[in-house]
Amino acid sequence: MSARRRLTTAVCLAAVGLTIAGSAIAGSTARTTIRFIEVGGGPNDRFVDYANNNRPDPGDVFMGTSALYRWDGIRRGARIGRAEIMCTIVSMSGAQCTGTFFFPAGKIVAVGFVRFGSGPAKVPVAGGTGRYVGARGVFTSRTIGTDNDVSADTITLLP
Image (cartoon, rainbow, N blue to C red; front, side):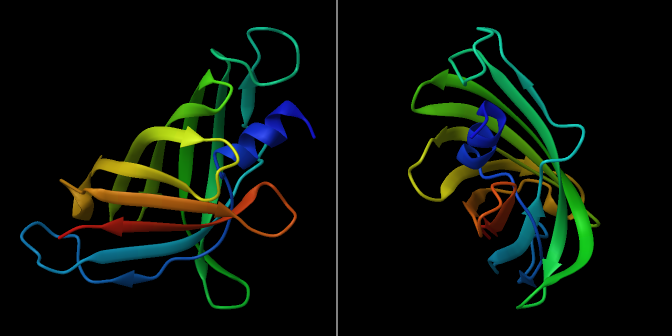
């Protein structure tokens, strides 16, 4: 498996769906859950290998974009946005990542440490714009299927 593929798997870039329950509008007492499939591995993905050994090492950087799709239960639904992710490897066990998720109602930003190979990635939500101003909560991503560039994601926003 290539270094880019391993890093892509580690940060759980992937593919498909959106379900919203509740409201992320300021002052709301309802929890908001956004579920979607994320499909990465596009032509704009870049792995910057500073050590030049074709494997992830501390200091190397992965940057990628993903398409976000509505989940209709069995297959990918309509496209509902995109994600832009940048991760800097800080140790052989993980990377510091920032992900910005662009939805029709606004952006959500998640920032945190992602541990390699430890199951689903969980990263704190650091804020947002539009409907998601002041957002806080957790972004969770897990690789699905055999394609390392597809993940099932959830953003859970607190009231």
